[in-house]
Amino acid sequence: MRAKTVMHEKNVLKGRWMRRSLPALSAVLLMLPASAGGEGIATRAPATETVTDNGSGAETEAAPPLAPSPAPSPAKDELLKKADSLAKNGGLDRAVALLKDLATEYPSDFEVRLSLARALSWAGDYEGSVAEYNKALELSPGNPEALSGLGRVLSWAGEYDRSIAAYRKSIEAAPRDVDTRKGLSRTLWWKGDLDGALKEIREALSAAPKDDEALEIEERLREEKGPRIRGHYSSSTDSDSNDLKIYGLSGYYFTGRPGRLTFNLNFYEATRPGATANATTIGVKDSIDLTDRLVVTAGLSLVMLEPENDDTVFMAGGLNGRYEFSSRTRLSAGYNYSPMLDTVQLIENHVRTGEYHAALSHDYRDVTFTALTAYSGYSDGNSSYDMTGTISYRLSERHGIYVGAVSEYKDFSEHTASGYFNPPQIFSNSLFLTVEDDIPGTRLSYNADIEAGMQSFSGKTESTSAIEVGVEWRLTREISLDAGYKYSRSALESSSGFRFEEVKAGVTYLY
Image (cartoon, rainbow, N blue to C red):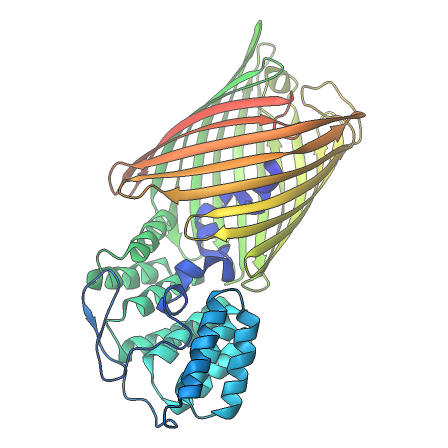
């Protein structure tokens, strides 16, 4: 589970993960105007009619008259329908090829250019899509549908300023178009303008107050901005009879570009038969957007260890960065110095680690590839090297269903008795399934992670398995409760022992 957690980056910077790490093509449902979710490639409202937005019942202003096009051709219309059907049923490459042939035959046809632009954007050819949208706009200057599509694909390509300009021109022509407002809100969000994003999504909600997508975006923006305060409790045990209870309080506040301030206070109570040890950590962290592509996070913590033999106080911290090469490819790297507080023995021995890590992720349509490497030095003189590869495939964006595989290799330089599990040459392979969704008609949402595989170390091979489930109940717009359970059999899960079990609960207040 730990390797897959790295692949999802486990919301180390949760708000930033929501804005920046959603892959362009793996967030189609949240990113697209109606064109990809329910609109066909060649479907557009007639220029002389009004259309009704989903969820609002309000009429949307009609598009301005189009530039003259060739007379309708039954053959052309049938081919456009065929391309639409191909794109919806896994034949996107064939749809693009068919639409390119149509564009050659009908170079001045707005519908053909618009359809080709959409198909190219879904296929990931952003440059080609932008060129086709511009050709469509030459045929119908100021057309809000083409401008909105251009804004969408530019946003996917990470060209936020050009995307925002296109969206705003579309809104000038059709100010009550809810989908365009949603697209503009997302782009402002990813650019770091949370206030502007909230303004636009609330404009969308004023026109369509029951639009589920707009409500979800507004909630995520509020989560990103804060302030947010969370109290939490967890209790865990492992196969070596080590018990750990954690009581914590954490929160954050978006201070405005370029940063967000996070704090945490945690109390640890570790026990084993005949012994007890306590620890307290107080930490602050600031995430700074140095550019639209580069985010740097610096953290500092005060650690107070209280074993039965003697007390110790020291400082811990880290510096981490994340860089987006494109909307599909991103690199994260950093260094963290931290205590190991999972067991009585670890606290008594004052074990600390300094870890250097780097991870590269790339999205290709519905698939995400991640490669991670890490090197850790331990205060007892030990060291470890870790390599992990992950592939994740999105089965359903709407229901948050992902499947994938993880391979991990970890090797310790020495076998020590400081209180953490450190056999030589751990090699692990596993498959996983992740589901995250809301329960219709309720204020409940849930998540479930299941993993199974094989693991070898110390000359033996064993099966591994893990299950983690959680539920969140949104009592009000501001207050939510959550609870979870986790069970794992893995040499890579806990600091000591092969079996790990945990229950947890929390309450969150979001302003």
